[in-house]
Image (cartoon, rainbow, N blue to C red; front, side):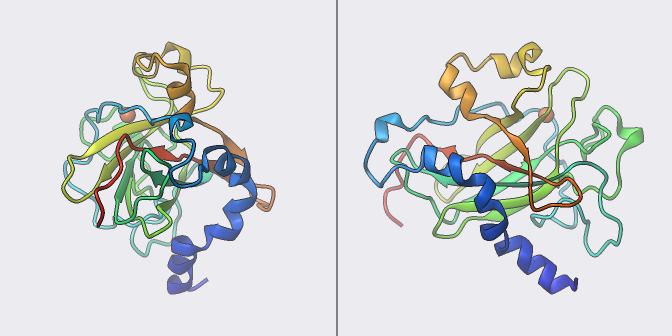
Length: 227
Ligand SMILES: [Fe+2]
């Protein structure tokens, strides 16, 4: 597939691919604007942690499997990670810069202080960015995170928007046995809030190579004051 087509697909293509998997999750959180606001669970804020890249990679797009125009993809369970950034009423927020960073399949961050640094997968981008449009939707292609010393698997998120301080959280792999031993995960005391950051990495039926799809909607605790 040529590069332009591939990037185009990454930017827009999940609408078809992800919809089948994402459907039930979408419906669960899809409040009509202004309605059921009290039923929307706010996504809990979580610490940024020490491994946000000191120096951003040269490639910061939303495909973490390929660095620049590299020919070799990162190793790991390919995951289509998508979701929406919503305000406290359930309305999508546009022009949000969504950043993610996480370990590769060897448990290494793109950071010199990371454990497992000697095993780092040079083909994994480790960090990516996506700017939301009017649907509030974001999309990344990445790998399913693995544990590293002291932590259960997770993906870090930073949400950046004009006029607001950077907001960070982490999402977790539903059913992973390490979750219940992880102090940062357990620091979320509210069951619904904990469930809101614990997401399914489900097999994508359409994939012949075992790709996964994960859906993580982020509900912010405010309503933008017009834009
Ligand atoms: Fe981390």
